[in-house]
Image 1: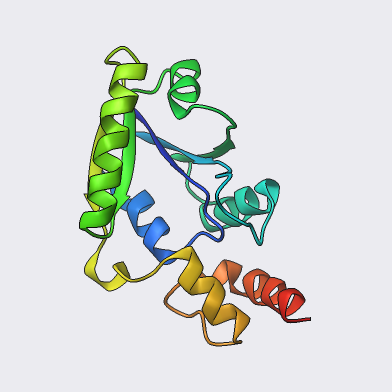
Image 2: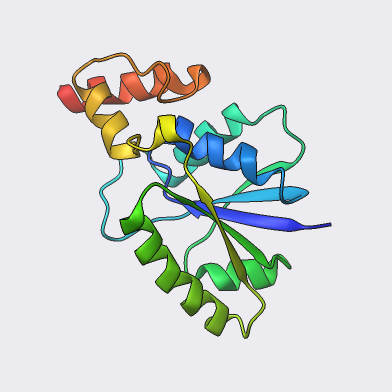
Length: 163
């Protein structure tokens, strides 16, 4: 069984993330979506809330598991016997950054982690969690940017931030 890992902060999970997850399942038999914290980011949703948003979207998929990890991703992958890391790419900037990480992950894992890059579908190229939060903050429609199952939670959180 080929097990892949797709990691990110997912604050919140977008249709772009969802698209990468669904397309990754054509490559791997099982995908573990790993929610992580990035110390450079400020979060609207805590770790458990982000995991729950993703779980809600993929509640009917037996091939998607949602987990969390603090620390080096290669350590999580070794612990879970995963050798395939999935990365979505929106643009050349993403590619440049992720290519560097792929070399580091390969080295840190003693060659046991391979990175597979999946280009974002054209319609999601400009969609990011930051973009979604900005739309939500200004009470704009999130249709087409996030799954219908999580729209209300995101809009409610935006309302809290607006005060």
